[in-house]
Each structure stands twice: as structure tokens, then as C-alpha cells.
Image (cartoon, rainbow, N blue to C red):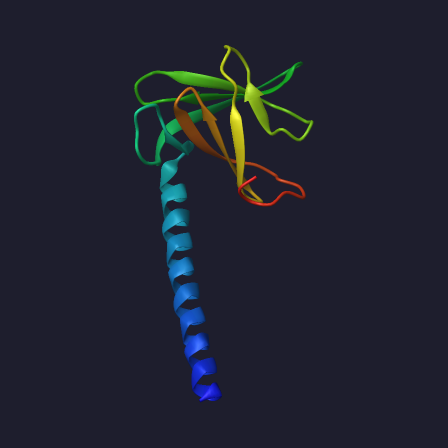
Length: 127
């Protein structure tokens, strides 16, 4: 009985691993086709898509990211070096940053959400 239970558990693990692999492959394919775009959910959008473009501008004040929406709207963010990730570069609205993975953050500001590549040191996802 124990051997049957262990083999069943092993099968479930393999099924879950295959599902995760399939999701990762689909995500990688979407990223390849994105051509300079980032995943975003502009204000009013229910789901994420590779609809926003990103411009990077280095200045004496730091690295600025301009995230452009398909409707012409945009947000400017400043990459920080103090562990916060990014902050709003202008305007009164605060950027809320959530760690999704060791190489990705989600930024919410003004009803829009963006998934951006990042180097996250020593933090756990969902924080």
C-alpha cells in the first residue's frame, strides 16, 4: 500500500512539473514575441498583456523608465538603489512594488500594473 501511495505521489509531482514547464514555455514564447514590450494591465484592463513599451533613460539622477500604454498614456518611474525597486518619478501617486520572483517585480500605480524585470536580492516572492 505504501509503495502504491509513493508512486501516486511521484506521478502527481511529474504532472505538476509538466504543467509548470508548459506555463514557463508559453511565457517564454510570449516574451520573445513581445519585442521590447513589457507585460502590463493599463487602467481598466482586467488582465496582463505585452501591450506597453518601455524606454530607459540614464541621467545624473539615475535610471528613469517610461512605460507607455497603447492609448498614449504613460508613467515615469525612477529605479532606486536603496532596495525599494522603483518609485514614481513625477506626480503625487505612489508606486506600489511587489516581488513576484527573483527576477521580476510588479509595480502598481494609478490603476495600472506593470511586470518588470528586476534583480531582487534576498527577498521572497509576494512581499
